[in-house]
Image (cartoon, rainbow, N blue to C red; front, side, top):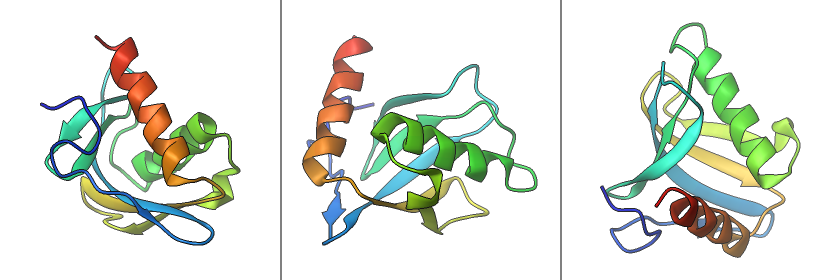
Length: 109
């Protein structure tokens, strides 16, 4: 698995009010964490099980806390019933997300 953002096809789309990118979510993990890249998706582990929207809710809370935005600014656009999701986050820039991912990849080495 690749640990560097953008080097294996990971792509963030920036619009006027935020960013959009793809996730690969692993539910029922030991802890909540960003664990690298899988193709064009950011790989995320979440402690919540994938039942009744619990993992989706935790995903929104996790990214809201990481990026210092309100939970209402994090939306799952596609993949609510899948491990493969597309998220939209208002109020952040592409640079802020990439800086967070670079920080995460350095701290996990």
